[in-house]
Image 1 (tube, rainbow, N blue to C red):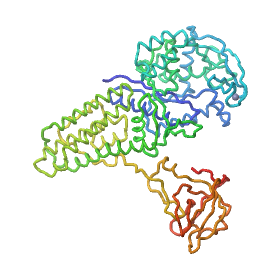
Image 2: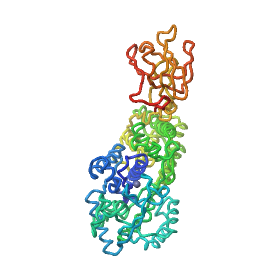
Image 3: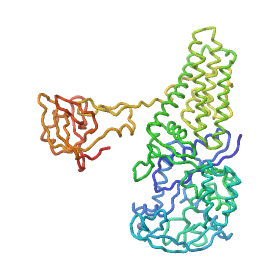
Image 4: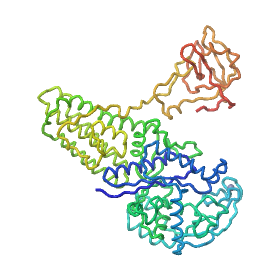
Length: 632
Ligand SMILES: [Zn+2]
């Protein structure tokens, strides 16, 4: 199979910092493009940023910079994130670029000339404070959600695209092409929208209200509004109709989106393409949302998950593997650190990492005396058949963007190879000289299986796949066609490869020994979830006194706001009791009570110290907070 493949992510709106949701879509696109390239296709992967509109203009005004400078700054953030994650986009389109604006204006002019656009009246609920319309959904008790003032119904002239006339055509098209919008649940959702009458689409805003946009070519008192600017990026990035890149890639266009922008992509966009005389895309592939530790990701909950963070902590491959494996394409999924660590340890460190370490060590230590392998047996046939079956399932899954099923198929194969090692017991064969040809057959089969993994894992965990291929001396670009077991008849030189995915130890929260004044140093890393179990609070020191017969300990009476506690701290060598009274310090409030020198201690005061008998300083606040305030 070889062909042409064009895949796009949405262009991300630059009023946001890149987060997990953006990263997921872009990782999917990267994995799919790598897969299609592996299969022999010529691929083109487009991502970019959406940079016009009120929100950008307002944010820029607030920051005292130009809208363009604001867009430049925020667009660069996205680009940096994708570069940090090693995502191999071929093109990065920005809607403020000339190449985009030219194509948008050309298509608008064409539609205007063809009578597809007309000047009409747009009415809506308007807030003069915000200088914008609010939709019925956004309005709270008839008022502006920001100003809480009553909205005014105003009507203004605007240009409209005659979308309503395409309703029948669109329904027929979606019914005639069952996998145009997929998975099927979203196709059904779109057909559901289309049961209501389709209205014409307002495509402009007067420049008196919105300056930051692309002027309409036939009336420069107006700029295009949202979708006629944003959606056209998929076409403008290829140079637009007539450009050789457009003619080559557009017939093979796949879009990848999250479900929040289903309607514009499944309804507005096909109508726009039809009106402009352009072919419809091949497939619209729609994925669900990530929740974070069981909660919806939202700015107000403060749990918006930065795009690059998991890669910084656990590595790019582990991040890719987790999101690709954990989310069933099309459905929602939860991003929990516990689930992440479980998959990393079980699937990557144990199943894959151990297999690679075990097999490369065996091969490397027996390669020197290797001869002609003995005949293949039913055990080798099992591995060969498992490899072929995994390929079949992988190809089938990837044709439907079912990344999780593709990975499950590869892991079935890894399981089969692990069982093969257990069954054939190469280490005991190695002790019997008469079994040497049999040992060589087993080692050749393992080398073959690793080579196979070095290819099929490339779209998903490219770093690890590259290391596996390098260990096997595979220097040519990987090709899916070579992913078969049974190719090798002599043992190739192989380098030992261990620690492909180090295990992450699941550590308990670091808890100090009773009586110690500073928390025990935690080796390794602690998950955010585990850290969250440590309840740190601001405490006001109400009283302090020496503990009799102790040179180190002070007995403190502290207020946590709603309660008083006694805490014994080993800081007498560094603080006089009187110096502490009235200070606000930080205590671990949910530490198991301990009795020190006969005094029950209900908590621990945090302090920093140098090694040995050096300096010690109790943590205080650099501005005031009430006693009891949570520290995180
Ligand atoms: Zn308002």
